[in-house]
Length: 411
Ligand code: D61
Ligand code: MG
Image 1: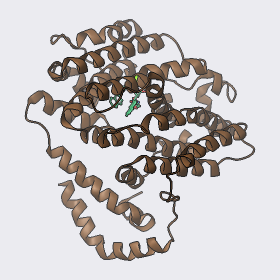
Image 2: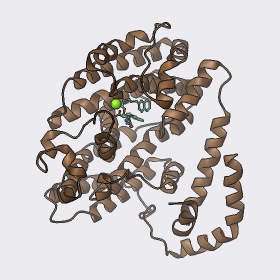
Image 3: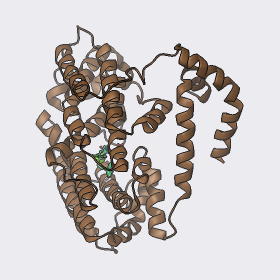
């Protein structure tokens, strides 16, 4: 949807979008002077669509550690994801990657575009890594080691069962959760969270990505990569590719709904992980991606477009989530609302409808039991409320000013 469409249909998203634009502009001006840190933060903004902003709002010391952690794992993932590198070359690199963190002469060129730049200039990330305090280095090294070994295992093996699926997601995302919990602890901002809750934070995000990215992954060149577990998709098709063809769409959507229902299991743990967080910046860093994930799942559920295009939340809705996720109350409210939206899309004829309903009930209960949700229907309030009419009037008066602001910001 274009800017004008947003103004017409979702005037309440204008202010958060302007605010987000301004924050992004402010952040992009704050690039540090040292070459390696400048590279790290520039690269972070280029390769991380969704995490750059939430990482950069952390306090200075933790921000550096998390930025390096991100780039190291993104580099490792670039090796994993490059389907033009053969298994024989790839496996030993993944397994030894953690040792190369300390070796300034090491490099391995792969990936494309910004990812290739990250790989080619990885030395600058290493210099930044070596500047971190030892506790941070050790946490990053340990997770890199375990993730590399896990990725290597799954290069040689398909995701067959749901157990495999959880194991793969543990390696590529659950371990990020464990590593982050350790970094928050080492920084003395938070108590050490349990591995199981930390793992769930990663699994929920990763599964949402895997569900949303079906089409992108299946169309990957030169070779498609598949993460949907056979144990689930084989109930609906002979081959995972079959889902992208129109004649199969009914089965495709049933499988999609099965996958979404599977991801919902992690929500309770995620809420339990976030509830005791003490530091405001860490809280937002953790909570914003989680709210985006439940929003994305609600959007994808029963939505055939997942098999035709990339389904994403509106930029304006994303901007609102970023602006309005500040407390646990906001998180409960958002999870309640997006679960209710998902629930409204369940059809009785869906083979998993009762299981999906059950999981949604559990989530809604966890949110209401907190006793702290008040304003429901915040994100999903439809246009024609009187609040919005007033907003529309204001917006039409302010449109020229806002357009000028956005335009000036782009320059
Ligand atoms: C709190 C806050 C953020 C959290 C968290 C808890 C727990 C886990 C995670 C973030 C990680 C979630 C990963 C979800 C996105 N998936 C990917 O990026 C896939 O790559 C996985 C391997 C590399 C992970 C790199 C990473 C990601 C996020 C971070 C981080 C490191 C470090 C700090 C903060 C956030 C995916 O990537 C390709 C794609 O999405 O297109 C893939 O290859 O499957
Ligand atoms: Mg990957």
